[in-house]
Image 1 (cartoon, helix red, strand yellow):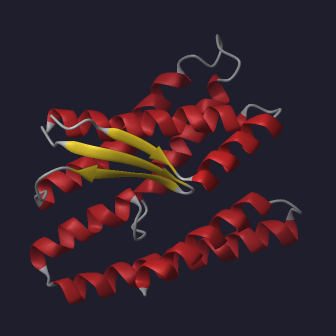
Image 2 (cartoon, rainbow, N blue to C red; image 1 turned 45 degrees about the vertical axis):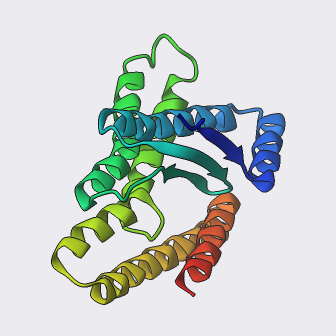
Length: 193
């Protein structure tokens, strides 16, 4: 039996460590907890679907699971992708019952909810984008699916970037959203080439 590996990209490790060390509000810690529960949802789904995993790679903008030894059906991949956002949304709901008893519950609820919703967006390489791709491939060809997914991804990333600029100009805040959207945009163009 092959041993499963977890690898972390050096920039992801540096960014995570920097965020945790500089964060005084608890947002970074709650974001990390929300991300761990999100990824646990994917791992649990893989286990329940009996999908053998060989590796989990932690990257700057998320994690990647690598399947060992076989191709997934569209249905399996769709369920595997849906499990992360579902875990985020369920944990967000459950933590909302702790608002009066735990000081960081409100913060965690918001972060986990946003993580779940963000990952459901039909953006290439997001869970929602992969779910859309699996759904479209059942009915359309690869070329049509690719065009639709790239169009949705570009539109939503552009919208996110414009929203970040709006927040920067109007509220004087939103630098993290701006950097995040630029990072996603650059990844989109790298993947699209």
